[in-house]
Length: 296
Image (cartoon, rainbow, N blue to C red; front, side, top):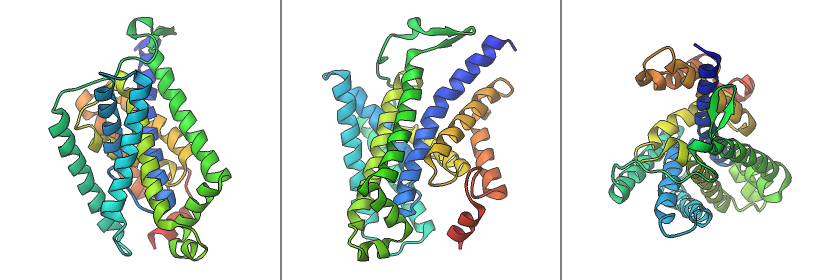
């Protein structure tokens, strides 16, 4: 295997790792605010990309992307209001089943709206012909857009949760919803906001990577599994670690293609998830004591 080919696999791994990282960050947003694992997160990525493709047919691309993010945020908030808010002290298993069911509903609606056709947005800048040459590997300008967007999202979320009053309220809601409510924190609205925020971030990621990876109605379930793997690998609630974990999973998948048939690529994610859950449930960067308390 030549150096140029290895670099090409690395570029592909980073590209897919970007979207896995953002899906994992979406898991962390909802988990950090509510303690809920939202397996519909992958569908928000699909919904954002597909909506942007439809709107871009008659609107400028930036406007189409902005509207797609807003529409997906509205769907995320609606999911919480319709399926989550009315529950009283739901068990973890019940929440997992509900969010998986929501994922299936969104997927079927998308199938009826857009069909099975694979779609993609145009490149934001340049095209495949204008790809950069890095050590013999071809790097599309859209890859740089993807990496930059991912890092911007994580930094903005860190600032939001650590430096703003609303972000602190969401963290307090996650630590103890009843105690936060007694302190005057509008916990119900904050839970809705967490779903809307995670949906919007997923939609933005779906738009940014759409020119490279393409999008279709059926990509959500696979992204949910890989995003959950990334979130667990990095330690639930740790968005910076989720980015690193996303790149790790993306690189492992890309390099596995050079050793095994492409059909086995998803085995890497599933095998890694099982290994983490068995050997280190807190993730590589998580606390074992925290994992023990959360599992109690």
